[in-house]
Length: 436
Image 1: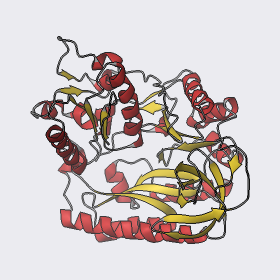
Image 2 (image 1 turned 90 degrees about the vertical axis):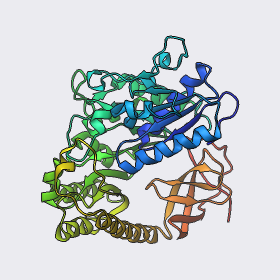
Image 3 (image 1 turned 180 degrees about the horizontal axis):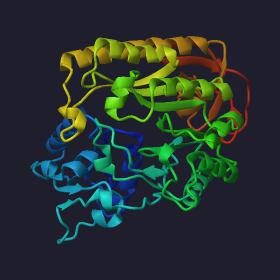
């Protein structure tokens, strides 16, 4: 990404929430006259993510010697001194400060490091991003922070405790995006299945989504980011059964398929819970596909324990895997446990990814001859309802096109037009791409 004119350069690592927040910062920086700045939004989930962020900071200084370099994100929140000590860095902002307009005002008395105690934050503002006409999918933050303390994770110390955006504010944001023609909205957060515990009346994620879909009837597609396997509420199950606008794709935070490792991770679900969940969801929406986060080589993991995680891919029928070799995070309980050798962690991660590739191939094979509703994000390229990348020749961005799958290549569906429709390319109706 290259900055031009008054648009700052954003370098983003990590999760979908970071991607969303980078768009918020882009507008804040532009409004503050920092169009020539470089903003590095860091991630702290692994040591590799932090290494890549530091590398990107040094590269940005070499390429942009006169630019104002601002570093923020979870790694900067957790260890601001480390980034402030880098000679390439001009300013360091915490995760709360990066979403405040005043943090980007370059006044003479503005402190170089603005990072407060994230645990003291009690509310999450609903930051609406304008100017999304070039986007076909928009992320809406509904929740922030996490109240759980998994033994491998430092994210709560970067994001703070769980807090939710009020239902009415979520509805207003999504309605405004739908009015601007955005065809798909992704609800995102750190732990979105904990949504509402801190709000009056304690609305669940499912209840909030039911109100959202009822009050924004023109939104064609709604999708969810990562879910905790033990917190999917009854309303969300009912929506999966009843609401075709809720996409049949769920990504689960599973991490392991072995009960003892899950206990040592301080996860709140068991292997049986994961199996029961996918069975229950398929009972109400048989076509749902599942993704999952999995960690390979967690401390004390034996080959038999890893085999349980490997088997989970087939036992749960997982399609999309996010695989991470375990990464020690200083100060976490897992970092003090007996460690699996790093080469073995990488070898197990590779085996998991291979199993994931095979699972994805089987799913793509199963779609041949079937009809897809594909949201076109770039010319001729898009995402199906099941989150499968698809090649739709000639289809224009912003359309939801009706296609028939004829094959797949390199993890991407190959499709042809399913029907002719010469109507306008609006997002609130399905329309075809180019004829074969």
